[in-house]
Length: 364
Image 1: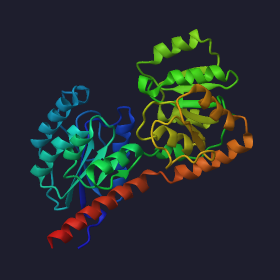
Image 2 (image 1 turned 90 degrees about the vertical axis):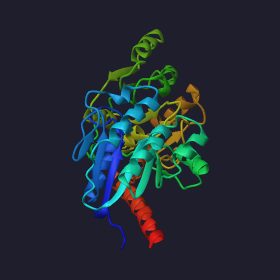
Image 3 (image 1 turned 180 degrees about the horizontal axis):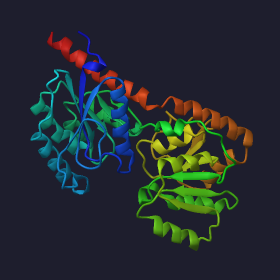
Image 4 (image 1 turned 180 degrees about the vertical axis):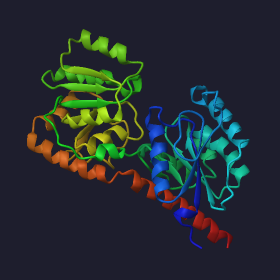
């Protein structure tokens, strides 16, 4: 008998869930909601934030997501999961889907053994250690997903299995069509203000383009320093908009011409896809492989370096050419339409069913 979506019971483990902010949390929440629309039963096992639908919270008085090192964090998480009752009485095909890093994958194997799951799926959100430890930690997992394209290629070589590139997708909010107002700013950036996002480069770029206006949406530990640096550089064309709701970010994107990401490293390019869903071309630094979402010169550009001059030239290629900007806007909408959560959930569900069917066939 072929396994169908209605026969799957996915036990999804990740300790932080919305409404807490962050791309990984939204990835888990949106994927869960989309799989449930397909008829998959999903039980979320978590420890912080608030889950929607069937969920088990492990340590209500302890924030495991704040614990460091990660080995301590995930050890407590999976220790708690091992001793919680998880309802598996409906006789569906059990899938344990672990989101995290090598520690989570390694410790998740104990929970999989206790539950007697049929399929062990893994999603890597961020690379935190060397090759051999991932080869060991992921040995019993299939399918394996990775939010970053470079990391997916690397894991494929390490594990000898085909690792699936699965970037996050924009929420439906960003696809909603509305009349575009005259742009308030030319270039918009969205993200946490931390060292990895490399916003110093954005300020250097703004200094080279005094007639181009920039808006930065987000908060973080670097905000105060960056605001002070902007004053010291006498930049009159940079606005710090601070933390904002998804609705406010969408309004900001819809009132801008171009999206920019200056990060040193990046996994899933969610903010860029959100911008594309709002019809913006994107200019990105080479912090990952973005060939699946950006066609050079058509809907944006990935620079070859982290140099302010190259970034400024890329921005001017679009801002200074209205016809090209309009063509890039339409192409961005087309590409973003391929990245919807329903399509990603169908891919994930089909991969889980494929593994389950192979296992059934091998045991027949």
